[in-house]
Length: 56
Image (tube, rainbow, N blue to C red):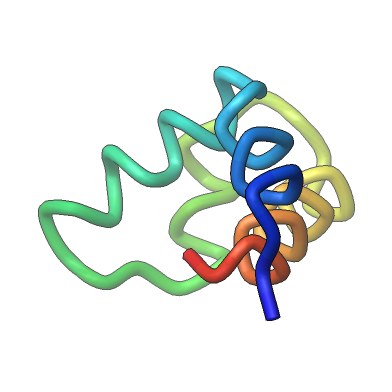
């Protein structure tokens, strides 16, 4: 179960906030999300994992 700490941790990073903004418009695959950033796919995977663990 997500905690308040995991929620704040998830929202503390600007990349994760941008991912959430992108997903407000439509569902995207991990690859589609990664294509919109200039960071590695493993880094995107980590960000998605943090969001998932926080209940997003």
